[in-house]
Amino acid sequence: MKFLSILSIFLVLIIAIAHAAPTKRGIGSKVGELGVRFKDLYAKQTSEVQETYKDFEKQNEAFDKKIPDAAKEDGTDQEVVDWLLKWNKKYNNQVKDLKAITKNLKKSINKLNEKLHK
Image 1 (cartoon, rainbow, N blue to C red):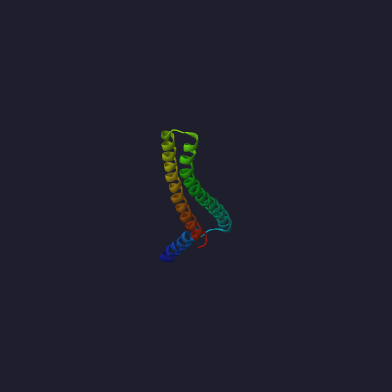
Image 2: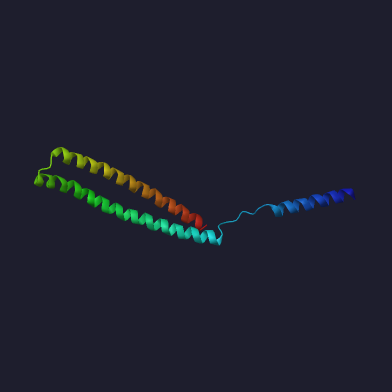
């Protein structure tokens, strides 16, 4: 009889522990809704940066072409023109970095999207 009561106590403890253990839950409805909202916002912002990048490329090329011509017209020193062209080259490199960062941002947004739709 003593054995049965000890066995019953252990059984009750095992059941209590099993019910007390937190269950792993996926994304809840509120978190999913907020996640989708922010994902869409992030995607929109990233898309805007990509559009801006296209403008950067056009403007950069125009800068390189127009500065030397304008310098000839108004007599700007070649040293200043060289500095401006060097500056524009560095700026163009930073824009390329921005493009790489934007590409990584898109990958991150895609990962978020995958997680939200599991």
